[in-house]
Length: 132
Image: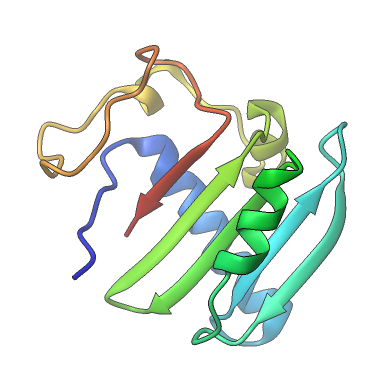
């Protein structure tokens, strides 16, 4: 059983972008994987059925150290997974069309026990995964 792990405002901002992007891209709420080049430009976007696993794609991308972003509403509206690997803060700020603020990296007092800590604290993580 998945557990909700979101605990930081930056996660919610990125989730909101990804959910809206999925709906505008696919006309529904579908899984997508964005693959980036070294400068943060999108090279490829893969749209999959919500029931299709992204594990095979993401494992291959991590193995070759390829920056990517995943939005997976596998059990929406109950659970949605987002993650990114080797994605710069500036790239995600460009997508959400705003700059992150210091407060975006402060953990909510009501955070779940499953929510990870930022290491180092209050710094954008270039690789991260969160369950909504």
